[in-house]
Length: 388
Ligand code: FAD
Image (cartoon, rainbow, N blue to C red; front, side, top):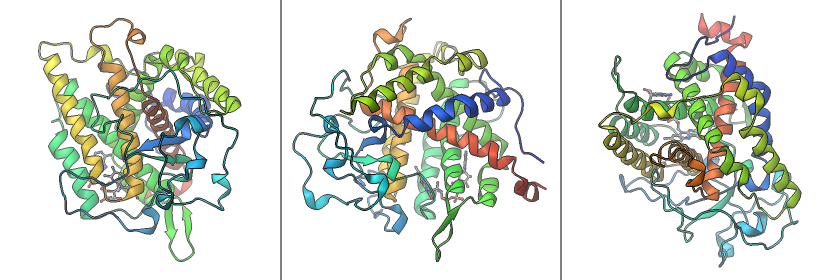
């Protein structure tokens, strides 16, 4: 009575059982703790809906769509921009215990992080003018009611224009990568919608929607496969950047919490259990090797930038927040794995921004949660009725 996948994950180096067990026992608990630390829970984002493709698209006005932006005094001092926000623009989180203000902050300037643009993404990360800070812990990715033509249009544009589905028998692995990454992300978004669904609008009851989980993800083996692929791809990026991530400065102004974040990062990137179970989650060295390698890479980069730009068209604020974060996270993984040409030791030249690292780790956490939901819900007794 379970709905489990077995065997080696396509184009990867580990099997489902190993990935599930190392995720459940090691990665998931570490990541869950990591994303609650002050350094990792505030994400800088341009939430302004600035769609270059369909200028008619209005902002989503559904209740569950709006993102709660952080009041100035809520996010870490070192993250603040110099001039501050106009007070009337702030939507308060007052009264919610999870929004309790951490005031043990000092005014140290943030150090040790590069301010450079990511060639894989569209947003100008150095443009502080239109950015706001969002407390991710207060804005969980879940069902928002965003659906219909606007949502469909985005997914269609992503799939049909930017990463055409590879035909079966396609031998060029590079072409598959982008499709699989996006499909895996799409699966993860669907899993989060299914695990945290508004079951009853009148009583405001939230919970798991097994039918949706099955219809959108579990009954399509390819979507589950791609979810695992994306997880391993991002995991590989994180372990490849191990030295960099370990030496980086996690400074939110809260010394104890920052020490904790640093220690969790170290446990993640140098994990003996992970290294023993799945030493090379994905082998990026096999890609872009042929004669057309550089050209293919350029093309993929351009396509990914278009996908990143499409996030500005997502007509629901909270979906846009998570869409942007996760696409930036993927862009960061791509940057780590592919952007430094011909360098044996990436750590020498790799430069990451604070926001990229926050996106990368939060993305890995989302994917890790999705894997866990797929295994938990997939093997739940209630699933039997749906599968048969
Ligand atoms: P969709 O999920 O819209 O899928 C459209 C089509 O894509 C499917 O018919 C299928 O052909 C194909 N497809 C589906 N899954 C995959 C896959 N894994 N791999 C390959 N192809 C696939 N809604 C929320 O409630 N909360 C959110 O946080 C949220 N975030 C979003 C973020 C982004 C960037 C976008 C574009 C949408 C988001 N949405 C969110 C909307 C949500 O993803 C769906 O579009 C919506 O729920 C409607 O679902 P659907 O059943 O029409 O299928």
